[in-house]
Length: 452
Image (cartoon, rainbow, N blue to C red; front, side):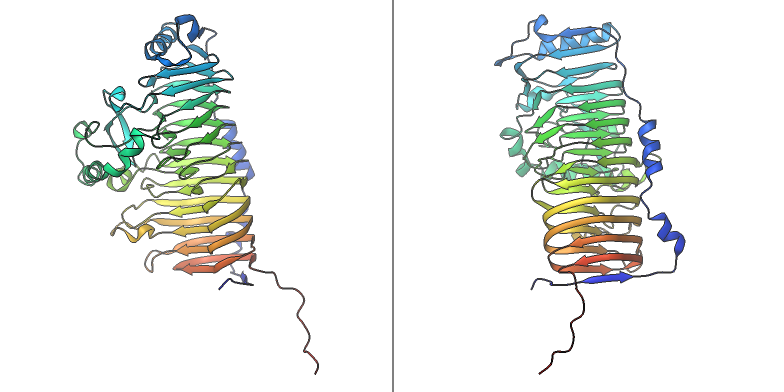
């Protein structure tokens, strides 16, 4: 039965806690100012001058490799991709101080032959470091790199790569066993026979990164993976990537990240903030994911903004504002961890969010999939303000802690969910403050006693 009305107003006496729930504009401004934009030498090379053919058939792998080598020889530069469809049978590997610029009408179309992405490279797969197929665009240990322009990057992920999903269980379980048993990194080799799909774009141990303007389509796996990288600007890009696990942007062990003006359309999470999983993640607490700003974005896909479930090194200082849905979401804002993870999620501020129809509007759980034991996570200082939602087909607000590890210090202010099957599920949480929270139809002036 749909809830027609629900109004919660919970007051607590901790004044300092209430004050700390305000959206910290000065903190956001300081992060933005700290992010460094890449700087590039004046050298430019147009791939057509090197013999590239934008006929959608010719293999341009050697041409792109040559362009990158020329940039390296000149201490960096800009690789220009003119109008056309450029097939590439294999990955693009960046070097420092390079901008890849896709002009209007340009499309880079990668092959979907897994053998083209060998030899293996050091990468990560669902929170565990290992050797696997190269991401389609891969930058390792680079400084000052960018992908810009009005063109499209097509990952060809809907056929062979998509078929890997049904075969990945053995490789996935092997990677997690290696994580739990501290197997040396050199022995974590996957690739052929294990069916772990590569990311489309991965920046690994890089800094001063810009991705701006381009369109990302048809990724094999995660679309844009920001791994152990910092000082990152993702701006004005768009997506149409609807395959399995097509997260839009995955910051992992990432620091100082600005994501703004992005139009998402993904087969999975729009933004999923991660920080390693389980034993390996907990060993990397010196590099949590932190100082991440998400603003002025249009959400469409499975979930809008997610933290977890791989977050064992910790996630802190996340700021989400001025975003809206551009279609259906399963969940709007989703914080998820379980008793295998450990680590923490803290200092999350969300404001000015407009959701249309969702399954669940705001969801915080420490018991994701009911899995794990021994490593419960700390979740604290989570603040939601000025959020509207037209309909939640299941729950309006869910908060799920553990009796011996409660979620702490949650504020919800000026929240209106017009319709929800279940209004609120709140268990094992301390210091939850709700002010002007409406779920269902708002109450008007009390009616008088009727006269017979």
